[in-house]
Amino acid sequence: MTNFRSLVFGLIGLLAACGGGGGSSAPGGGTTPPVAVKPTVAEASRLLTQASFGPTDSTISAVQDAGLAGWINAQISAPLPAVSHEQYVSERLAELGSVSANNFYESWWRQAVTEPDQLRQRTAFALSQIFVISLADTAVDVRGAASYYDMLNRNAFGNFRQLLEDVTLHPMMGRYLTFLGNQKEDVNGTRTPDENYAREVMQLMTVGLQELNQDGTPKLSDGQPIAAYTPSDIAGLAKVFTGISWYHNAPTATTFFGGSAHSDRSVRPMIFYPVYHSTSAKTFLGTTIPASTTVDVAGDLKIALDQLYNHPNVGPFISKRLIQQLVTSNPSPAYVSRVAGVFNNNGSGVRGDMAAVVRAVLTDNDARNMASVAASDFGKLREPVIRVANWARAFGATSQSGKWLFTSTSANTILGQSPLTSPSVFNFWRPGFVPPSTTELGQRSLTAPEFQAVDEVTTASWINTIQSVVDAGAGSTPTGGSGRDVRSAYASEIALAETPSALVDRMNNLLFYGQMSAAQQTRLLAAVNGVTIPASGTQAQIDAARLNRAKTAVFFSMISPDYLVQR
Image (cartoon, rainbow, N blue to C red; front, side, top):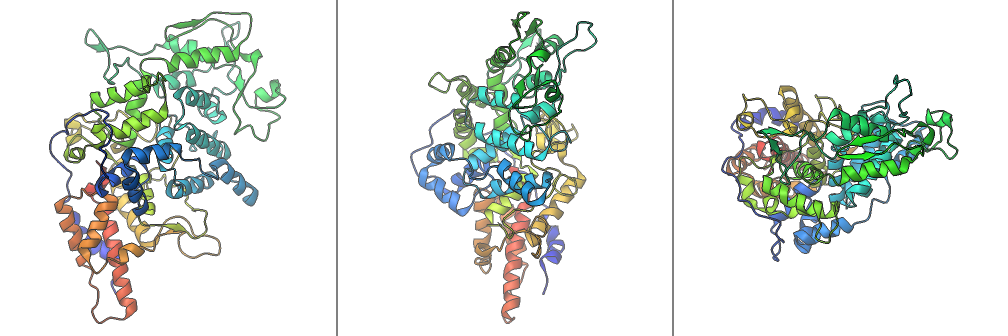
């Protein structure tokens, strides 16, 4: 009996004609309430593609029953997971005696695939690529990283000001951007405060490099963009982040420098050590904290974070980043402006309401208009991690151990990406990346962040990796188990195997939000029909052929350009 692996190579030629979509830009719109009619399967699936780690039969039904806005509101109100990442890692620490990044990955994959608060899960993943720390840095420990991700979960639908403060005071951010234990300048001028966090909190987390209009376009002076801050702003702000270090219930100079460690110091917010805090004048972003003989770390920090929070760039900067993470790499200025307007005022006079901002991102007409599917400048490349989460959710994958034994997928021969493990503070890819001018995207000056990680190796690796995952599952083999830990039985797909058109329709609904191109449907139907179900074979042979048909449909769907470009 021909197996799935041989089918992959026998049918690979069917992909040769695959191409991207074309057409003109979708009409603009505005943030309009979804129409009070039951969403179609396609509309529900497309929302879930943007707002979760992938549609399932049950979540498509949930969106149809509640309506688009109703589902979003229910998700915003959903409780946090019963078992936090920190709790899971702590339990594994007690069980194993030590933990590694793999134990965080286990918890991350379990939550991403199985937790019902999918909008929070997807939003926290987006935030983790804006407020970056990375397990690739040995300064970031696993339990601390788990705590940091829990903090992003808690703040996903809270206020941006609280998010900014919690990020600033988390010890893993202090470690990653090297301001934990940051000392004031000395009288001889031989020591100056560490400027790392002061620079990156402006450049990557709040203000950006250039002054912005509300629609995210740069403000100009004599035809040139205006810098949002200067080196002197960085130096002034860096003084604020002095005298902040490890939590301890009895802080001393020793604990400031890392000695006499408290058992919870990697998961509790950092505390203030006044003796190491600068009392000189601190000027940044148009404000000055005057020099003082009285040390006030908390007061200085409040002034600084308030100044960052209220900077006019923050609305368009954060709005555009969230749109890029969830919906499209090249949002129209009007789309950015509408969402930024909600950041500035949620309709009740509240600035920085993240629940309102996420709702605005997802309900804007630019996001919901199905005509966008045909627009050549709309959409984004699906991140590799999200693709595998799509597979696990759509096809009901389960963990035989219950622990979701994923290990690192960072190698470019696997996914080139692991959660919370970017190669630098600039994330896995730069948000403003434009491919080279030798490409169509580059010739059109279109932003395509995720394409920064695309080359011959990663393209081939995705095909090899997803073929292996579809065929044999994902994750390592559990102790006492057999095969890979995370697998799908493809029960629903096998049930349709003898009706290839129905199997293709199922792929269309789950992976393509009903928008699979006619050419892709033809290719996929040919691939499925290429697997013969023997009319007079044994039951084992018939079952094997049905399974191969199911796997063929999933595999060829998930390597197609129609799938890889989320529209």
